[in-house]
Image (tube, rainbow, N blue to C red; front, side):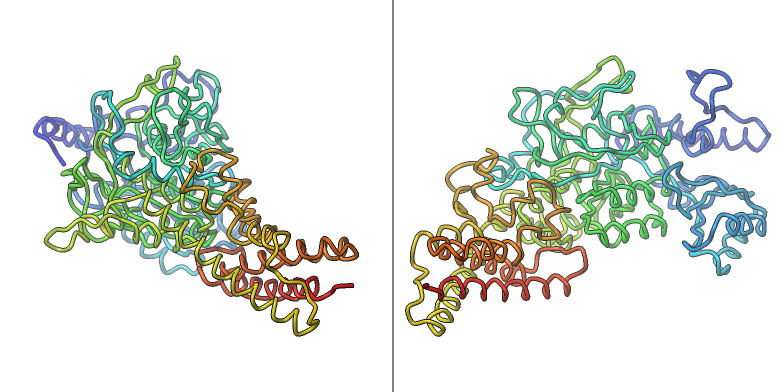
Length: 611
């Protein structure tokens, strides 16, 4: 959306772009080096890529006053390209490739190294160089380097209640999940996650755990927010809640991973974002939020997204604020693209729409804590901001809620969110504006909990009947499973001893959450990455207990119950089909069926033996 007030700024921006371009053509180059950096200090990564950030100087108030309506190429960095060389090329081969084309490669990151390179090409040679590179067998692809931006429309700070949390049913959702064990990466301007130098951890993030992040702008581990956008986004995902300070977050039990790819003015490049996505996935992010975008459908972005989803991460991105077609990565394959709605579930006028929108979520006057004064001097505020940047983290937070319940396959997480979404009617059924509908985090959490409890109870009943019959066939005097010392362990290992607790007590309480989980889900409290290996859902534990306690007749029913419950849990994973494993779906199914069969044998043996 472009307001009348923004039009003069846009015209000035266009004029300044032309002026800067003309000045550069005449050999007059404006320095973009931070004047605060001491003379002779080492050149930073941001300095080397200075021109990438240049348009920020003309977008002083909001990111809508930028060349967003001038087409895909207007976002390209003049004279610069991204070259993704084959992964098996060594350093001498990369140098040889650069020499053959008369290029000088600048790595897109300082650590860890990749084969993605940036090169400067004379403007008139751009098309021919790209064409020649695309035909070179040493190159996977080459394309223009493009800018991306933070997708929000800043306005004045706004006090008031968080209508958006109520609209997605957050309070009801917290009865069932708060996202414990899930790590959400915010690939953005950084997060106020630590006290470091002039930066401080946000007062309303004090109770939120932040894991190690990375700063791709300066090339170090301190991904502090010097702009404000990333902290605001992170607050919607996991703002410290029920602490008597400020605002609430959708998944306040989740961990935040700060990945800084945008500079202090909110600008970065497709290469920066691609590296940020890869870094987050490789360092254990389960959900990746991308509240940024641009018009170029860059292959370097798509490849990074494919890598993240292959690692089991759910990728969520803002649709954009153009009022037109969805930007990228919001429209990229494998991404949940999010448009923005107002308190009446109407699409915000600024929100992008059309192909690429998968869900809609609140994005108008979203109130969260963020930093001001570039994160320095302990400056904080609680503004109400507009934008699809504000909508996307609602979906990322809801994804964390669902993953915290054991839905660890990315496609299944998206499916749960889409099926539970609130359908909004329009001339085309709402699909072009809202995707599957408006996010309903409460419905998603409740539906998943119901489905898991029902499936596990049915599996427990069926497996108990099967084992009891098998035990009687072996020994007509076999113990009956209809006894407390069998049933209690079976319930604890199957659906959870107090699986019904969320309908009586809020699962936001840690001990209620523990009691409501099956034994095999307790490792989710440590982390989703651990749970994918099912360390507590296998035949080893009941087998070990049998080896130790089989000689004690009184323990056999309890061991049998634990075995049946574990087997029922494993079979429920196969039936539900929403769990992700480290070695793929087929391997997970084989593992579950094999271990369930062993658990059935162990249970039968313990019930049948009466001596």
